Image (cartoon, rainbow, N blue to C red; front, side, top):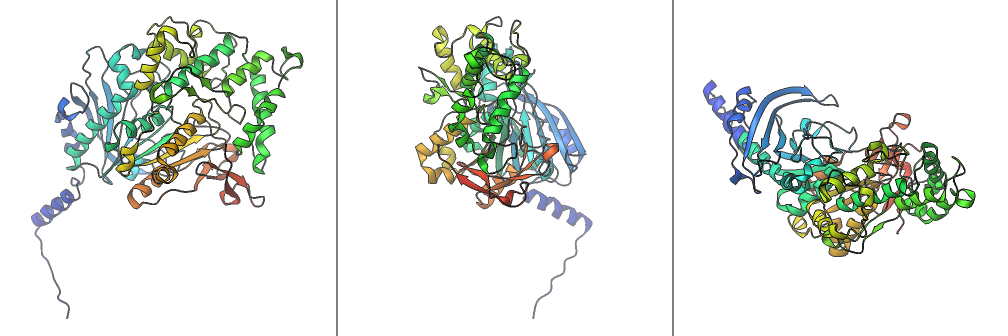
Length: 548
């Protein structure tokens, strides 16, 4: 005979029970505007932040009830504030922290882009993830980000003349913002998050690798897309490219830029058994790159018009394609910056590539190409701290009196350290992604970093903690295949359920090819068409391997 139990509670008892239960769950009762508002009274001392600061203050709190960009409801407490610098001349670090009503007991720090300068709100989708699903905030993640310790345009590096601002941009803002966020989350929910993740692309991808390299104890999982990990090499390579374009008569007009891109696609598109505007078999395309380049040459090497390239213009393409080799070592023994896939499908047309102006008037602008502009900013404000410095006069291979400074900067701003055994030991998981057609951050340093991990730790150990995806046709957030995928769910399932992500599905966001699917193949595999079925369905492709 089963015993039946019945319980009678008074209204007061029910309230006490509910409060007790929510406290046990680590949450407050249903959000009350006063709970969010009272966070303004929270004082965060310098002792609660691991790196030197003068503490942090909260300037604004709001209870927000809205919908994210995908139409999903969310209700959260928005917290704005700043972390005070030690140097009174250094800008503070501004931050935003979002505390959702439906908290899932996890936190997600989100990275920035370029030279940063804008607060990462944490309210949108993960960079380079496309349009899959609701935002992390709507899913219940407490999200946060900062401006990296200065305000300004993401192409402006003038902040770096201040030592503390440079250190903040390079890496310190990540730890400082993390520590402040954990204090606020703990205060609001009565517990620290059970899991903490980081996600970012480009500069944010570098930041993602930075945190697992420098503070592995703080993060359970990391998503790093298109990481500018060899930051100093990237910027110096941009100067090398600018010199080829503007000091050696190698600029290509828009017609010639089109010619290069279309010639590569014509040579390499069908190497995956399908003509779809994408170069998927990148390594086979690389093997014929010399012949592709030679086929572009004008007879005699002079400029004979838009149907071919002069020898000087071929040199520009070759400079982009080949690696910058250094006779000295950057941080972590790095002695090169691997070249770009311009002869394997990367689109260097327009301001994100070659640029649109044949003339250089004063200091470079975006019309002179993104890589040259960013390289010039690095040379003027990080390297020489001379706003009038002519970056065309700088030789990365022979930096002369600046060599020690170059090496120092590569240690301040960069994420090339492969010794991540502490991250492995704590069970940390890393999802790496890079587009094969990226014209802003070369794909190949990311490949080199992954290979270095395998060399150090062995394939089995790396595969237990790192999954690496290369996406054909995907550039720096756009491209012939503008991928939409869901890396956060993949990471969370790996961390929480030990479900290692294998082949994932990416969808194209381009209007003309919207929704077409491709398998996202774990490196070193790539997608080849099986020869039958719709070319827009991922299951009609196989992931195969071609070794370099």
